[in-house]
Length: 174
Image (cartoon, rainbow, N blue to C red):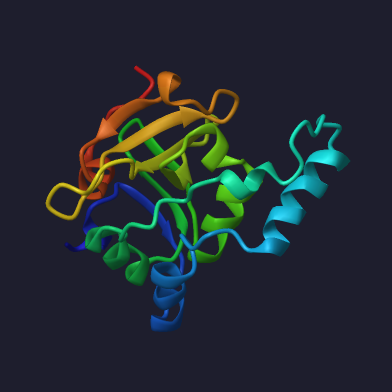
């Protein structure tokens, strides 16, 4: 796919290196480390959350599934960036190094088990891969969920694949 011709507006970043792609495919969706589990609890305490179950993040399940080849191809072209097609805004596609931090910082495994965030729309909406099931022809559905309501019952499917997400031009909230 010629990503440079897909978007009406684009501010791509430099493409991901093979080393960054290796990090994406081997470390981004790895199980939480002990230090990450402790870090999640420390962050919760600092931000006034009541910790009923210390180290509850141990139970978090990050889906260990392959990223779609189309998404990896996109990252090789632009590792992050801002894009738009018609009314559809991609205020930020996350760079590889931002994905895991976003997963942990927003407690995605607790809020939307099986979802992996890949970007935001500029209105508080996360674009997320729905990795709860095996991919269909190497692709996962893409959902959007508002950052103030990260839950499957509040999420909407906006595309059946990563290329479909990028090609569509209508605002997903309408």
